[in-house]
Figure 1 (spheres, rainbow, N blue to C red):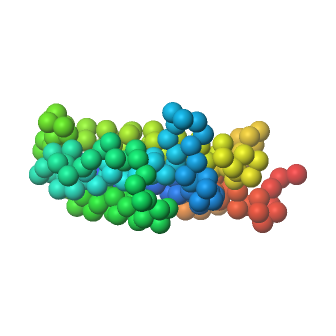
Figure 2: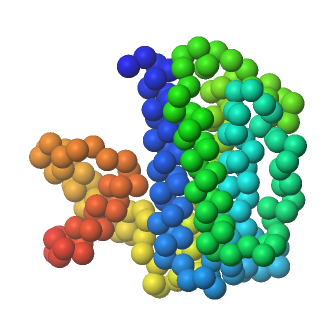
Length: 203
Protein backbone atom coordinates (compact mmCIF):
# COMPACT_ATOMS: atom_id res chain seq x y z
CA UNK A 1 0.00 0.00 0.00
CA UNK A 2 1.39 3.40 -0.98
CA UNK A 3 1.45 6.29 1.50
CA UNK A 4 -1.44 7.95 -0.36
CA UNK A 5 -3.50 4.75 -0.29
CA UNK A 6 -2.75 4.37 3.41
CA UNK A 7 -3.83 7.97 4.09
CA UNK A 8 -7.04 7.59 2.09
CA UNK A 9 -7.90 4.34 3.89
CA UNK A 10 -7.20 5.87 7.29
CA UNK A 11 -9.24 8.98 6.48
CA UNK A 12 -12.23 6.93 5.35
CA UNK A 13 -11.93 4.75 8.45
CA UNK A 14 -11.80 7.83 10.70
CA UNK A 15 -14.88 9.37 9.06
CA UNK A 16 -16.77 6.08 9.44
CA UNK A 17 -15.76 5.78 13.09
CA UNK A 18 -16.88 9.29 13.97
CA UNK A 19 -20.18 8.78 12.14
CA UNK A 20 -20.70 5.57 14.10
CA UNK A 21 -19.79 7.28 17.38
CA UNK A 22 -22.41 9.97 16.78
CA UNK A 23 -25.05 7.42 15.87
CA UNK A 24 -24.39 5.37 19.00
CA UNK A 25 -25.09 8.52 21.01
CA UNK A 26 -28.16 9.39 18.92
CA UNK A 27 -29.58 5.90 19.37
CA UNK A 28 -29.84 6.53 23.11
CA UNK A 29 -32.01 9.64 22.74
CA UNK A 30 -35.77 10.04 22.79
CA UNK A 31 -37.30 12.39 20.21
CA UNK A 32 -37.75 15.04 22.89
CA UNK A 33 -34.08 14.82 23.86
CA UNK A 34 -33.03 14.95 20.20
CA UNK A 35 -34.68 18.38 19.88
CA UNK A 36 -33.85 19.74 23.37
CA UNK A 37 -31.83 22.94 23.81
CA UNK A 38 -30.13 23.08 27.20
CA UNK A 39 -30.16 26.89 27.18
CA UNK A 40 -31.06 29.78 24.89
CA UNK A 41 -27.59 30.02 23.33
CA UNK A 42 -27.05 26.31 22.75
CA UNK A 43 -27.84 24.23 19.70
CA UNK A 44 -29.97 21.13 20.04
CA UNK A 45 -28.55 17.84 18.81
CA UNK A 46 -31.05 18.06 15.95
CA UNK A 47 -29.48 21.35 14.85
CA UNK A 48 -25.95 19.92 15.02
CA UNK A 49 -27.05 16.95 12.90
CA UNK A 50 -28.62 19.33 10.37
CA UNK A 51 -25.48 21.49 10.23
CA UNK A 52 -23.13 18.54 9.74
CA UNK A 53 -25.39 17.15 7.02
CA UNK A 54 -25.59 20.50 5.25
CA UNK A 55 -21.82 20.81 5.33
CA UNK A 56 -21.40 17.26 4.00
CA UNK A 57 -23.69 17.90 1.04
CA UNK A 58 -21.90 21.15 0.20
CA UNK A 59 -18.27 20.14 0.68
CA UNK A 60 -18.32 16.72 -0.98
CA UNK A 61 -20.63 17.15 -3.96
CA UNK A 62 -18.42 17.50 -7.05
CA UNK A 63 -15.51 17.67 -4.64
CA UNK A 64 -12.70 17.97 -7.20
CA UNK A 65 -14.41 20.31 -9.64
CA UNK A 66 -16.44 22.90 -7.71
CA UNK A 67 -15.93 25.11 -4.67
CA UNK A 68 -16.80 23.42 -1.38
CA UNK A 69 -19.24 26.18 -0.47
CA UNK A 70 -22.00 25.53 -2.99
CA UNK A 71 -24.24 28.39 -4.20
CA UNK A 72 -27.35 26.41 -3.20
CA UNK A 73 -26.21 25.99 0.40
CA UNK A 74 -27.99 28.20 2.91
CA UNK A 75 -25.81 27.71 5.98
CA UNK A 76 -27.80 29.99 8.29
CA UNK A 77 -30.93 27.86 7.87
CA UNK A 78 -28.98 24.85 9.14
CA UNK A 79 -29.32 26.46 12.57
CA UNK A 80 -33.10 26.67 12.33
CA UNK A 81 -35.70 23.92 12.44
CA UNK A 82 -38.10 24.46 9.56
CA UNK A 83 -40.64 21.64 9.38
CA UNK A 84 -37.78 19.26 10.16
CA UNK A 85 -38.50 15.89 11.75
CA UNK A 86 -36.06 13.46 13.29
CA UNK A 87 -36.66 11.15 10.33
CA UNK A 88 -36.01 13.84 7.73
CA UNK A 89 -32.87 15.06 9.50
CA UNK A 90 -31.43 11.56 9.80
CA UNK A 91 -32.16 10.91 6.10
CA UNK A 92 -30.33 14.18 5.29
CA UNK A 93 -27.46 13.07 7.55
CA UNK A 94 -27.19 9.64 5.91
CA UNK A 95 -27.25 11.06 2.38
CA UNK A 96 -24.56 13.59 3.30
CA UNK A 97 -22.21 10.95 4.63
CA UNK A 98 -22.81 8.80 1.55
CA UNK A 99 -21.79 11.78 -0.60
CA UNK A 100 -18.53 11.99 1.37
CA UNK A 101 -17.71 8.29 1.00
CA UNK A 102 -18.63 8.30 -2.69
CA UNK A 103 -16.23 11.21 -3.21
CA UNK A 104 -13.22 10.02 -1.20
CA UNK A 105 -13.32 6.33 -2.08
CA UNK A 106 -12.41 6.69 -5.78
CA UNK A 107 -9.67 9.31 -5.29
CA UNK A 108 -6.49 8.35 -7.13
CA UNK A 109 -2.90 9.22 -6.36
CA UNK A 110 -3.10 11.75 -9.18
CA UNK A 111 -6.18 13.33 -7.57
CA UNK A 112 -4.20 13.93 -4.38
CA UNK A 113 -1.95 16.26 -6.37
CA UNK A 114 -4.86 18.52 -7.28
CA UNK A 115 -6.03 21.72 -5.62
CA UNK A 116 -9.62 22.35 -4.55
CA UNK A 117 -11.21 25.47 -3.12
CA UNK A 118 -13.42 26.13 -0.10
CA UNK A 119 -14.95 29.62 -0.12
CA UNK A 120 -12.37 30.51 -2.75
CA UNK A 121 -9.42 29.48 -0.58
CA UNK A 122 -7.13 26.89 -2.24
CA UNK A 123 -6.53 23.61 -0.43
CA UNK A 124 -4.63 20.49 -1.34
CA UNK A 125 -6.89 17.44 -1.30
CA UNK A 126 -5.22 16.31 1.94
CA UNK A 127 -5.81 19.73 3.52
CA UNK A 128 -9.48 19.67 2.46
CA UNK A 129 -9.99 16.19 3.90
CA UNK A 130 -8.24 17.08 7.16
CA UNK A 131 -10.26 20.30 7.44
CA UNK A 132 -13.53 18.37 7.29
CA UNK A 133 -12.35 15.53 9.51
CA UNK A 134 -11.51 17.93 12.30
CA UNK A 135 -14.71 19.92 11.73
CA UNK A 136 -16.97 16.86 11.99
CA UNK A 137 -15.14 15.39 14.98
CA UNK A 138 -15.59 18.73 16.80
CA UNK A 139 -19.36 18.69 16.29
CA UNK A 140 -19.68 14.97 16.99
CA UNK A 141 -17.95 15.61 20.31
CA UNK A 142 -20.73 18.12 21.00
CA UNK A 143 -23.37 15.52 20.13
CA UNK A 144 -21.84 12.99 22.52
CA UNK A 145 -21.47 15.56 25.31
CA UNK A 146 -25.07 16.74 25.00
CA UNK A 147 -26.43 13.21 24.73
CA UNK A 148 -24.54 12.18 27.87
CA UNK A 149 -25.87 15.25 29.70
CA UNK A 150 -29.46 14.57 28.62
CA UNK A 151 -29.38 10.85 29.46
CA UNK A 152 -27.61 11.45 32.78
CA UNK A 153 -27.52 8.25 34.85
CA UNK A 154 -29.10 6.27 32.00
CA UNK A 155 -26.21 7.07 29.65
CA UNK A 156 -24.41 4.04 28.22
CA UNK A 157 -20.79 5.05 27.93
CA UNK A 158 -19.08 5.19 24.53
CA UNK A 159 -15.60 5.44 26.01
CA UNK A 160 -13.59 3.42 28.52
CA UNK A 161 -15.65 3.29 31.73
CA UNK A 162 -14.41 5.32 34.67
CA UNK A 163 -11.82 3.58 36.86
CA UNK A 164 -11.51 0.66 34.43
CA UNK A 165 -8.62 1.69 32.20
CA UNK A 166 -6.30 -1.06 33.46
CA UNK A 167 -8.99 -3.69 32.89
CA UNK A 168 -9.62 -2.36 29.39
CA UNK A 169 -5.89 -2.50 28.59
CA UNK A 170 -5.80 -6.13 29.74
CA UNK A 171 -8.83 -6.84 27.54
CA UNK A 172 -6.99 -5.45 24.52
CA UNK A 173 -3.81 -7.37 25.34
CA UNK A 174 -5.72 -10.63 25.72
CA UNK A 175 -7.46 -10.12 22.38
CA UNK A 176 -4.16 -9.37 20.66
CA UNK A 177 -2.55 -12.45 22.21
CA UNK A 178 -5.49 -14.56 21.01
CA UNK A 179 -5.08 -13.25 17.47
CA UNK A 180 -8.42 -11.47 17.44
CA UNK A 181 -9.18 -9.21 14.50
CA UNK A 182 -8.02 -5.62 15.02
CA UNK A 183 -10.94 -3.21 15.38
CA UNK A 184 -11.22 0.56 15.75
CA UNK A 185 -10.81 2.08 19.20
CA UNK A 186 -14.54 2.87 19.22
CA UNK A 187 -15.47 -0.73 18.44
CA UNK A 188 -12.99 -1.99 21.03
CA UNK A 189 -14.85 -0.04 23.73
CA UNK A 190 -18.17 -1.45 22.50
CA UNK A 191 -16.77 -4.99 22.60
CA UNK A 192 -15.55 -4.37 26.14
CA UNK A 193 -19.06 -3.29 27.14
CA UNK A 194 -20.56 -6.39 25.51
CA UNK A 195 -18.15 -8.49 27.55
CA UNK A 196 -19.72 -6.96 30.66
CA UNK A 197 -23.21 -7.73 29.38
CA UNK A 198 -22.22 -11.38 29.09
CA UNK A 199 -21.13 -11.29 32.72
CA UNK A 200 -17.45 -11.72 31.95
CA UNK A 201 -16.11 -8.63 33.71
CA UNK A 202 -13.41 -9.14 36.28
CA UNK A 203 -14.40 -9.40 39.88
